[in-house]
Length: 358
Image (tube, rainbow, N blue to C red; front, side, top):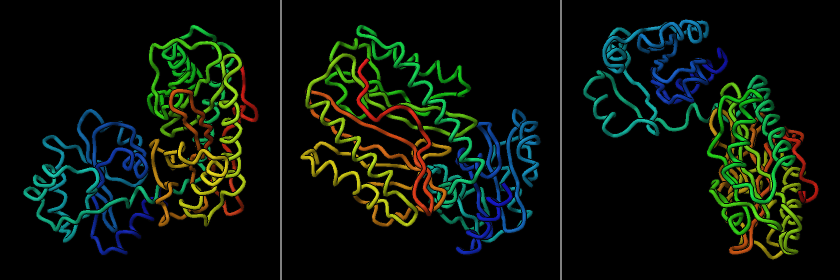
């Protein structure tokens, strides 16, 4: 945590800010270790304060104080308490997270704070894109839980089972393995619905000869995983078997080529050119990847428009090309990749080499 705080202070110095107020909960957890739901941090070039109410002060002393923060209990409104600190510190400029503060809240802050308010965007989020060894270890564990849950589903799924039953089984099983929750609403899309990239589970029964796409993940000690696999229940249509091989080839080509120094556009293009060469370019409409960490969607992004994004050592990014044929079905295969200067490392081991037919 000390290194993270030092890195933020370097950023503040670079943009000539006296201090910054952190209110986004994921950014708070990253900088302070706080896992509660109410609080804010005030960080200057030389000091750090964490403000929360009486419900969380004991927790803050346990989690946040060891990271070098002075704990302040607000007995009235949170921002009023921060204004008192600002008066004592006599700061001239204060950055705030413009992406996470509403206009109405900004209006209130302008009235309460006697300091020059400076909107900032993505400062902490950019720091979060590069994972340290502890973060990588937690994401590995979250990925391992998702892998085991997928194998569990393969062993018990059958025709007549509904998509929602499959989703519930995945969610509960991951919790049994130590997950604290799901990364996002679990996607289970079968038959023609598998052509919906974000087809969340319904009461539709899985029928024989259908593809089933599962897109799911879990939180483990605050960090997420994101896994997609497509399998068949009984022998599927010949074209669906073909597009599975095309998507697999695209996904594995990304793994082969991904490395630090690649732009997000180049990362995406590796997969897109394989799918386009096979004649399915018009049926791959989303980006190839996105970062994961404390949140399910973080930087870096890998889309056709990500020319200004450069992957660096320590990024963890998804690799998830897909083909979606309206009225027939679709395929997506996704792993979480650790980006290194020497290449990439796949954090998942759920089977994918051949289309699994159960």
